[in-house]
Length: 285
Image (cartoon, rainbow, N blue to C red):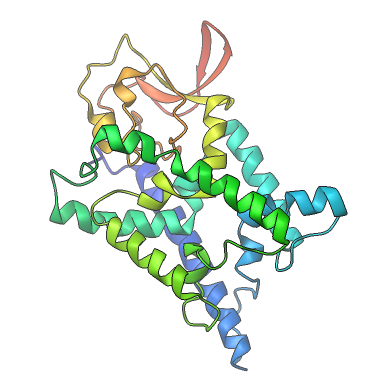
């Protein structure tokens, strides 16, 4: 658990909750319109238009024919570029701070932590877990290739984002509901199982951890090896044995930093590396 629930901790929780509520309200508004009811004043965008992954799957169609896959809008394409740009600087902050599916898994995980206080997020052995994490890259490749070939949203019949926030409609496929159920149940045992093993957008954004401009750095000289950063990490990254965290699974949630969990100031924080031996701390401490 965090050492102190300070402004940084609560800011993230509030931001996650606000984005989650926004998606729920906008989706419900679409349902009200379909039923002929008066919409509430939160916008009437479609779920596809609010998902940056829609921009990813339509890239081939856009660059070869100058059009979008059916159901994909310009807003989704614009969101994709914004999320990619943000990831270039700070890594997958969209995953750790914005994504509503990630937030729901995290909130369910809080229940799992109460049920399994010592075993939670440790049910899958490291030898198996390390290989399962690459499944999401296979999912990403399959979706992009099949979408480009069939010119339709092949992922919609399995997408947990679409199924959860469109559950009151008749557009959700049974396959998507089954997968959503597995994700929710899995979240009681494993933190963010969808993010870890299957999310195609998370797979793409995770690559940015390899060359992101603002890096998460651990000061080996002041680190006391308490392992609190390892224990708090939702993605099971061994933060305590790395000087710069470049793991493709990092979601930039910053729970491990000395702003929230690390007990030693100026030990674990976001850093802008200008040269090999020069650095500027831009995240507290």
